[in-house]
Length: 135
Picture 1 (cartoon, rainbow, N blue to C red):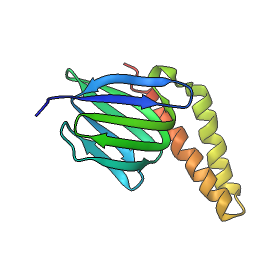
Picture 2 (cartoon, rainbow, N blue to C red):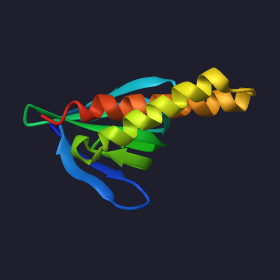
Picture 3 (cartoon, rainbow, N blue to C red):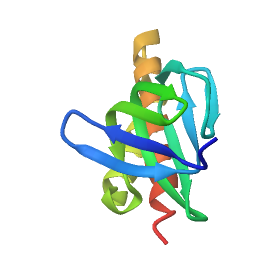
């Protein structure tokens, strides 16, 4: 069995990652999934969360917001609405988004308002957590 697998992370705007990985964690709709080389084939919906993958004993992180993953024994392809590396995240903007989401949670009037605010809060918090991992 191979020690690595191909990894591609794509958004509508660009190819974010084209690399090899030894292992990775992805935010599935119902919780995080761990992926190793030789993983059984799988297609899954992705939620807002942090992607991490390891290559040559170094861990790389990305903030992800929604998408799909196709996992094959030798390749993982992620089609994401957004995916950002730590250095690409505008921390000030993420903090402002978090504050707006927290206000919306306090002032929401409908269930849709609360759902939208919770999604925005989760995305802002994920972006801030990943931004801290620049070093």
